[in-house]
Image (cartoon, rainbow, N blue to C red; front, side):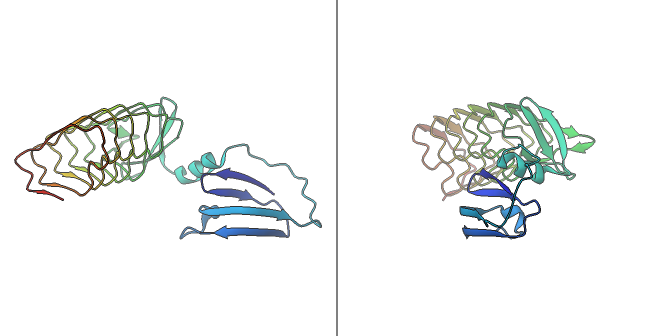
Length: 231
């Protein structure tokens, strides 16, 4: 056998071994795929097992998870790696090595309409992203923990910025939100500690709970007359 560690778990490949003794605390995902959420404390090989075969891969556990997750998606090369789009036009993930992403409005004939759930989550190397005018939604946690981002321009086509979209982007200093946006979700810009000023566009009616929670350097917020509730 061999194991590859990644955040919070172990990807384990077993090659022809009849018996393994495991002492572990296990929390499985709903699909129980590749022990995805397993926390390994100890793995012991029985003394009767002779494991001589060498591993046939060298990728890190995080990259193995990424390869499995991105199988069958449309890959589009950007600086530092690839971004991955579904057949429905949602950018769903990226290589964690991506540095700059100029997202096109179309990938292999598929119109890009959304930045999906967790698409760039923890992509800490990402310093620049361009969102096309075809995108109408920035979904939950789309750019969460993108610590390298310092500025973002959201195009006028976007209608919704969902919960935690830019949460924990600690170096984000500048955000341009266009008039077309009508919804900004819970904690969308929470813990953006470098953010100093934000202008909420006319058309937003509710500022959700914790939208700007713990933005400790935020000193100026421009709120339009369209806002009727701050939760």
